[in-house]
Image 1 (cartoon, rainbow, N blue to C red):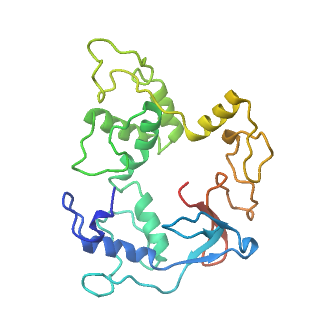
Image 2 (spheres, rainbow, N blue to C red; image 1 turned 60 degrees about the vertical axis):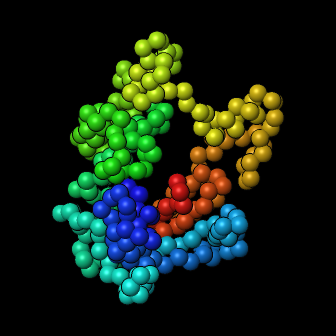
Image 3 (cartoon, helix red, strand yellow; image 1 turned 180 degrees about the horizontal axis):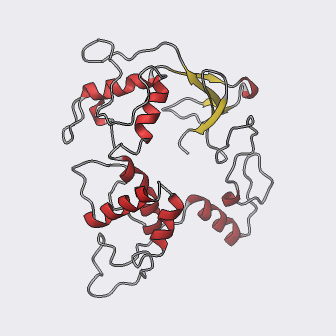
Length: 266
């Protein structure tokens, strides 16, 4: 769901209020971020809007930190915009609490949030557009299909491979892009396959192959295809994962110092 419009005012079309925004933000106030000493001085990104950031950050649970409501000037109490039965212990770190709330099977929107990306990727257009706008006011292209896809996804215990297999075996996925006089103007009901753009990595490799050029990617051998660069060339501690080249990498550390991993925008 989108939860940014209500930063400055109550959402005009949904039930989310400005108070909801600051209450949810409070869960992220106690998150520590520090540059990993092993990658000191290495930066990634940097634009007129956002300055360059450390290549690797250690993310940990901070012991203090609060959010002040811009309208009231008061410290906002950490509260979820809605609750469900599957919540973490109230004494757990705030980062743990919000992670549990977001990923719980009891969270009503989770089923739709997780099954929309593979549907949109495989079919060229999602059952909801934009696919991240999981709002009551957002129309579902085919409500029954949306309901059935969610039910199947939950039954498979959120198995993405199961979801992709289900899509590929469907008649809808196997449609031709060719149209006829009955569906020539139909763009919303999946009566024909949608023409999809090539993913950036595939287009990059295709251009180099067609022109006979040799690709030169930072930190990779010359001629290495972009599609094969599924992991970054940087080595992280044991137990950590890596992200695609040229993407920001974050090493997450718990309060006890054990390492996990994540990435910005993976």
